[in-house]
Amino acid sequence: MFRRVGLAAAVALMLISCADSMESPEPVEKTEERTAITLHFNAVEGLNPGVSGHPAPVRVRVYELRTSAGFLRADYFTLVEHPRTALGPDLIEYDEVLINAGQQVRVDRELNPGTRKVGLVVGYREVDQALWRTVLTVTPRHVNEFAVGLDVRAVRSDGSVNPAGTVQ
Image (cartoon, rainbow, N blue to C red; front, side):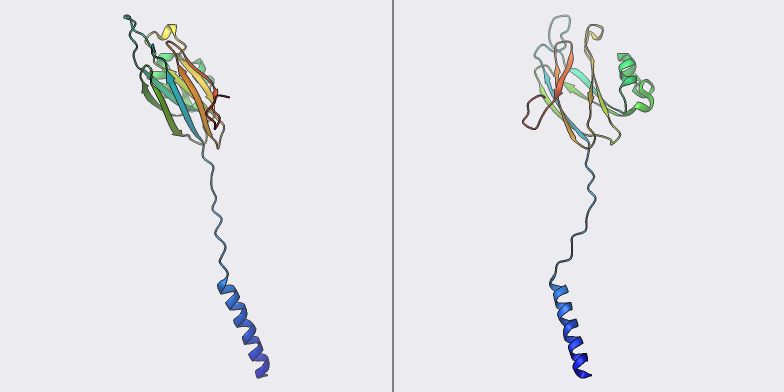
């Protein structure tokens, strides 16, 4: 009987020593992929000329949107002065950045998970003669990069920027 108890104790000690030397597995953490945007603005030297022809800075408003339908229907002044009224539930968030002539600006922004479109509105002096808005389509759970050109009286985005820095 002592032999069986001794054997059982020896086996138990070996199992405990084996288990003690093993590392416990790391807990699995749920990592949510984020949705973000990087905007590479490139403003031309003659940006937003006044009566004298001298360039002037522009204010670029960045709108996070669920859809772009209301954004494309609204007029410039309503979007700028009353964005929540103009866009209703399509508007998630908005911000702005001031860009000078000849300046290159990079804007990095975390996006709300519900953002599917990003609308840009540029405050040109002669808004009635300018192409003042554009819409960018965002891929959820990715870092989206776009090259945005600010021309004399027009905003344009030729497409997304790939990791090598070239426009797709």
